[in-house]
Length: 50
Image (cartoon, rainbow, N blue to C red; front, top):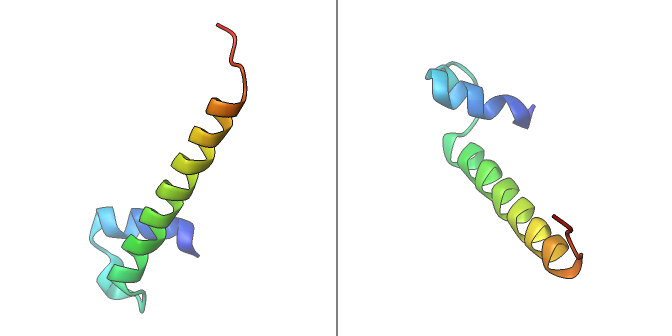
């Protein structure tokens, strides 16, 4: 369950499980970058009224 990785990293309990720490960081970083790119593309192509 990749959505639990941030909690395990923050709490320090990730060593108790067979989850790789670098893979967990890569998943979090990839999710952030994909979300940032999609948000940027959406807001540059869509007229956002204030």
